[in-house]
Image (cartoon, rainbow, N blue to C red):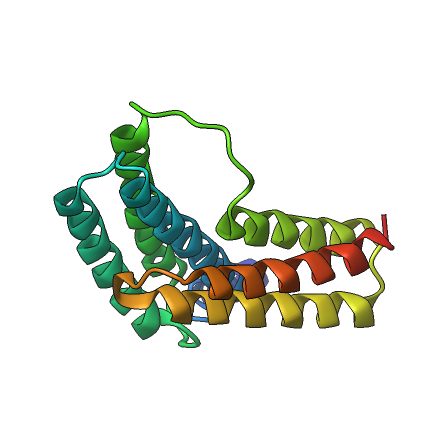
Length: 188
């Protein structure tokens, strides 16, 4: 009987210890990268909406202000050990902003070439898929990820605080994405 009580206490202690470890704060690089991707896409949608007059200047400014607040919160979470629900809340805010922008843009539909933000997201998916299915060797996967992260950070820097990219800046980002995509195509 004493052995049974002892085993029960040890088991309860072990479960308590394990469950405590599972909920400890940690870094979430995938959540960080996904938030960056969402911010890039949202920034481009706002800029394109303003350029095509699908969004009024007031709407664009409102969306940019919301994005700036989210970006401030993102910078506070970046590279910190936090609970996953903090990232989930940030992603929820980004998703809600994206939906609001989509609703505002819904009245105009145009077919145009893929935007740089969409290309960044698509290349991220391809790198992730290549890593998961083993078609992308580890060293190349790291190199491609590093290059894409660099392009994404440069693009975010160019568009922060609602600044619109110049034609030259968009062309440079597009050229770098083309180069990365060409090299990534070797591993199909």
